Amino acid sequence: MSALCVLALLCSMTLTRSAPLTCEQMLRPLDQVDLHGLEGRRALVAASLSHPPFMERLRQRETASVHFSSNTSDTSISFRRSTRFDNVCYYGSYNISLQGSSFVFDNITTTFTHTTCHDCVLLSFDVESGKRQHFYLFSRRRQLDHEEIEEFKAQVKCLNMPPPVVMDPAKELCPEETAEKAEGQKD
Image 1 (tube, one colour):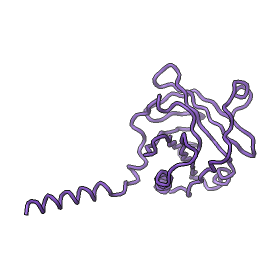
Image 2 (tube, rainbow, N blue to C red):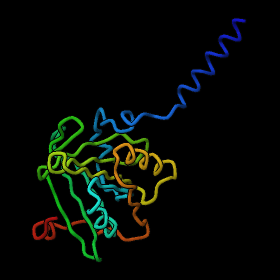
Image 3 (tube, one colour):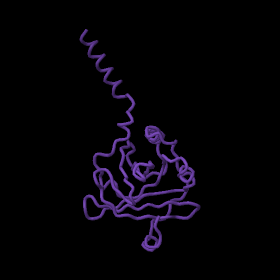
Image 4 (cartoon, rainbow, N blue to C red):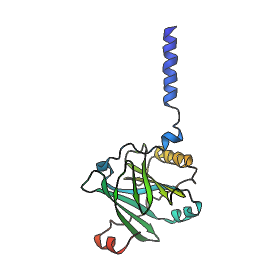
């Protein structure tokens, strides 16, 4: 009889572990941002916006990428981004200071959000003090596994945002920004 109780307990524990995550669990900010693991370039793999009229502009984006690099402190980093529209590249470069799992640039609060994708950075952008939200999944790989994309789609659904735009991994990323481009052109 006690063996039967132990078996029932083990089975219920297995079922509990395989239960789907709640939206609160899926959308939690990172506890700690690993600056050294964050460094480098990542391509935009998928994204969604809470403002449907801007979704068409997102669909027209050919490629996008972000590049993080460390400065001298534990919280100060460089954040560069590039976007390609109509085969023209646009760049933006910012020195940012991490505040927990967030940073602010151009009055946009950006939060690093948890993802199970091992080489991804999931960023939630709070635009215009909560009027709009942008949700972007970046990775060192241009194409993710099915499960990783499905997790992102579930996260987007939790936010009540339109289904995400998945980028074409065959399209060329913008070249790395040079000092001349950085001075002459901001996104």
